[in-house]
Image 1: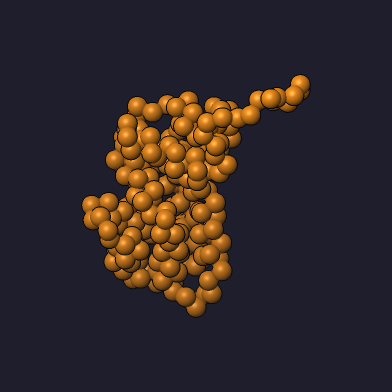
Image 2: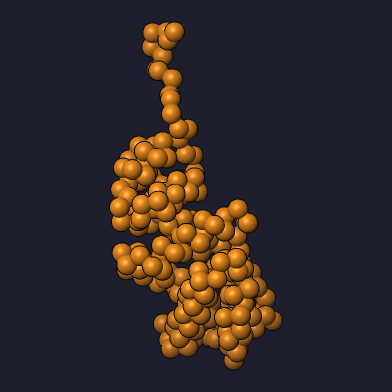
Length: 199
């Protein structure tokens, strides 16, 4: 029996408490029904949270497949800065990309789902341009610092665009090869990056 002034006990699904849990709940819905047919309200209900709580975790539904991208990107930039000058530019970039894409085994299936959405859902392909720009800026900043040229000059920008292309090509191959290790495919694709040299 409830006493006066006490809220009723919550029933049903336990509410999510992290971005990862919310992302997993959403990915399950996308897998069953398709990204375009799932609303924010339905994701929130499946996760046991309210609409306002959803937006505390993600600015929009389109941001959800990106997970903790900003934190991971900040970690990649910190990693690059930590490398000694003796590590050649290409090796440094290759190493950073591998670390950026290293996942716990239990997260690999979810990451496959995310990349399937990001690379093959038209609405998300357009939205992803902003994230790719942020990623390229990190690469270009590092390359510019090593080359001693402005970030916006040709060499750092060309390196950043080339590296993004090599990574996206690796992801496409990974999606087409179930059971393959992402880091192995990335290493194969990124072998070309090792041709980049400090001046």
